[in-house]
Length: 278
Ligand code: FE
Ligand code: FE
Ligand code: ZN
Image (tube, rainbow, N blue to C red; front, side, top):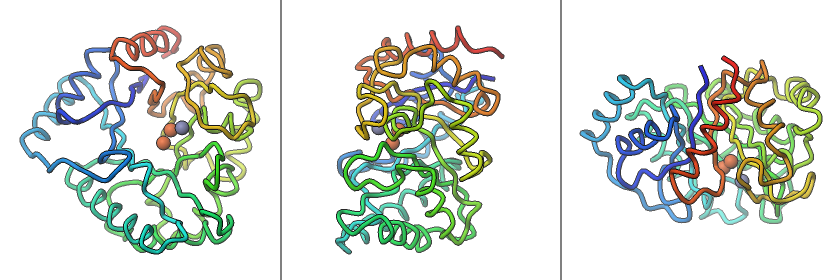
């Protein structure tokens, strides 16, 4: 079963987002835990949640992927920023445990000049401080394009974080096609080779979700600029191979393309579904 969806706003609630994704032919979606640029968050709404669960059951909608705010930085050189990240993580995970939501996607962090090694140590420390053995949510570290001082630009960096975590089974990885292509992994011409490398370094059992984005910027540019599928450097043919790859095709896939309307997302979902082989 193809698990395909896109990023949606939950400003009108989770139930509404489920209805929206269903109306455009998707069966899962991604949402921000709170305002992505800040930290504002709506109150937990039990009635909305019950309607959402009911609707999902009746319409075969898979649990959505929750994305942490971009502004959260687990490895800032500023201790107050790291403490804030901890608070947000604790509060988001607490809520997700109420939602019974399996996955929480996180940008590992930016070392802000301290260097990769210290950055990796601080990320692991922050995560070890907030995750205990009772955690029900799996935290996905997203592979990054490598702009600025972002950590997670290579399989090795992600592996180095994972190695330092205490509760390893509470963590996984999310592969963003735009990010890895910009980071220098040629998923366009050598998908098998990239996945083999992923498996050798991280282990494909850790890969839990895919972000499907084309890239406005060229291969290995370390720039993070998403494009609509087929309107970037990766191209549609590569996406048809990605969604059908035996090692990937069962994973949930989420569009984070620059679509302004549901209709624009619908076009991409329809195109992908037409090229997916069950
Ligand atoms: Fe992301
Ligand atoms: Fe992403
Ligand atoms: Zn991105």
